[in-house]
Image (cartoon, rainbow, N blue to C red; front, side, top):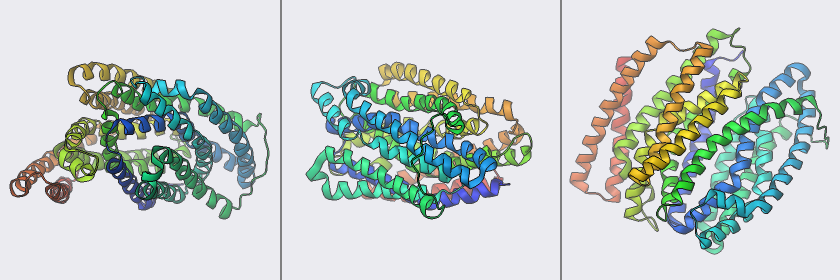
Amino acid sequence: MMSFQTIRKQTQDILTFGLLARLLNFLKGVLLAFFIGATFRTDTYLVAFSASVFLIGIVADSLIVSLIPIYHQIDRRDGKKGRFEFTHNLISYWTILGLVLMILNFILAPAIVRLFGPGFGPEGYNQSVRLFMYGAPIVMAHVYRAIFGGYLQSQHLFRAGAKGGVANALIYIVYLTLLSRFFGLEGLMITGIIAVGAQAYMLAKPVFKKQGYRYKPILMTKDRNIIRLNRFLFPIVIGLGINQLNQAVDNAVGSFLAEGTIAELTYAKDIIDLFVGVVVMALVTAIFPVISEKDHRIDKEEVDQSLRYSLRLITMVVVPATVMLLVMAEPIVRMFYQRGEFTTQATEATALLLVYYSIGIIGMSLMLLVTRLYYANENTTMPIFIAAFALVLNLILNIVLVLLMGPGGIALGSSLSVIIVAIYGVYDLDKRMDFLQWKDLTLRSLKVILAGVMMASVLVITMSSVTYYLGETLLASIVMVVLGAVLGLGTFFGVVFVTRA
């Protein structure tokens, strides 16, 4: 049986390529800011792209999560032969569904874009509809990415997925640096199809080459595994769909504000993803197949140990990242984005949004883990309730805080809503699984908070010293961020080590 040591090893394996993929994705965002900036045109592209991948992205991610326990059950019952037969049927079944979804995207394009960008005028609306239709075929690429991704993860094989993320980002970077000036935003939408297609290919390759799989055109809609998959998939789609609606809510509210607001929100969230997405997603991806294989009643001690280890790792990533972003938001944004079409005013606006979004990092990270833990125990009801609760809170807080604070209210509302819901999710999960040791958790939390305060003090001193000698230049920002990261993280982990947090 697999233990938390296995989770640690798999997390490290995913990080090998995952970190590179995240860095390249962030570079993609930097290039997008350089060549396009935070403008009206950027807003139309971001709305069109998010709309084109909204439904299929939810379905694809839900399919990956749903397939893992299904494949585990098939392996125990029918072995490799049963797994292959199910995969034949799965590919046929979802190819048909994917084509239907793609056609619906073309037909419903005007209504979908209006839903995602209600504040756009005629020009922005028409451009977004056109871009959306260019990106409609991305549905099929996501379908195959999900099928082969779910297959590999059920076998605890993660490297191909991480490599696919690298390939995806590289394709965007090549387009932005060499071709964007010739083919514009339309070409960027088509590049998205090619990038996801490359991911699907890299996931399919080891299934065919190393697993020995060969597709046979079989379609049995009443197969018991397909029926079980659909029953498991539907509530997960709803749960993940509600989560994705939070981003759509942010963009929809942002579309009523000043031009460039949606782009600034996106750039701020990209920075957060760079800081915490690598480790947190690697951990969640690695732990889900392990926990889904176990019966908590039989393997309770091992599962509890793995869960506590996962929470500690998340904390050790999230707290220093949050402190760094809160204290050094402006130099970080200036270092990454302020060049080309990205102005000083855009830097100041994005930095403020980054501060507010960073407050919610702990909630975002915990929700990724909590949701997967519910799914691992085949509880698909609570994630829907939690996601719906978060959506309602986010919508209410967004509207109220935007009226009081402007664009910053969108980011702060999102952060507060996810923190509240994450706290509830952890509490409810512990009631069901009884895996937390509250006395130990409280003591560790106090030690980590102390380490965070010490780190913040070092960062403030570093910023003041660098600004005094170098001013607020790009060079000063680079020196601040690099020196702050070294001294700040050194301080944080030094305190953690001394206090044995």
